[in-house]
Amino acid sequence: MSLFALSDTHLSLYNDKPMDIFGNRWQSYAQKLDKGWKAVVTDKDTVVIAGDVSWGISLEEAKLDLKYIDSLPGKKIISKGNHDYWWSTASKINKFFEENGITTIGCMHNNAFVVDNVTVCGTRGWFSEGKNAPREADFDKIVAREAGRLELSIKEGLKLSENNEIVVFLHFPPVYNDYVCDEILDVLHKYNVKRVFYGHIHGVYNLPQTISFDGIEFSITSADYLNFVPLLVNKS
Image 1 (cartoon, helix red, strand yellow):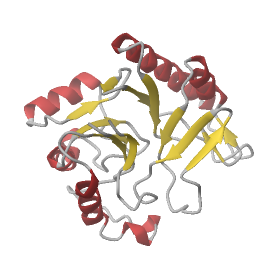
Image 2 (image 1 turned 90 degrees about the horizontal axis):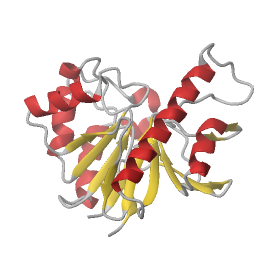
Image 3 (image 1 turned 120 degrees about the vertical axis):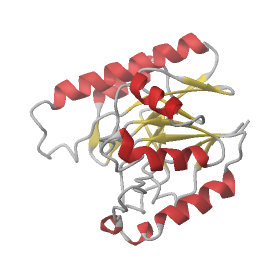
Image 4 (image 1 turned 90 degrees about the vertical axis):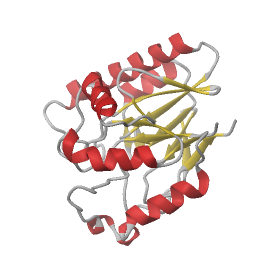
């Protein structure tokens, strides 16, 4: 019952969207993902995919990608990324899963999951390229909303277990170069979260796998960074 993470699968079985714009590591990435996943994940394990799951722009377009993920070993917990245009309400997604025989994927949206002695919480988050980068007009509103969703997820997790370690999975990094999302960080400190896993960053391979900032460990899980092999988060 080990817990793994690998974000940004960027699947496009419906329309075969090329990923070469993100670099050479993305050549034949679907085959790399299949091989890397099956090399480490068993049917007893769980994998968190924190965003950018599929390029589909609707649930119907994402169906082949979701059914493929469903076919892979283990249980999966997925959450929304900035490219998941197919994402809908949790109830619609779960209904779609039921109607299409997708049985191994759980949708993380204002909720939480227990995997052995770990409680999995998270949300999309939000991101700016740096302190001097221009921010969209509603940046503060979006960040406040995402911080609220993260807190709601953690509160739901505490209802499931008060003794488990809370591990947070975000799509956007809350700490990256000179960018720090204080609103997200405040929630992490409030609930004494010590481990956070994030994706979104592509083509940057000289990053350390894990950094420590303000008493919290932040680890990257972008598929290309990991060479499409899920990262072990917790071994039972």
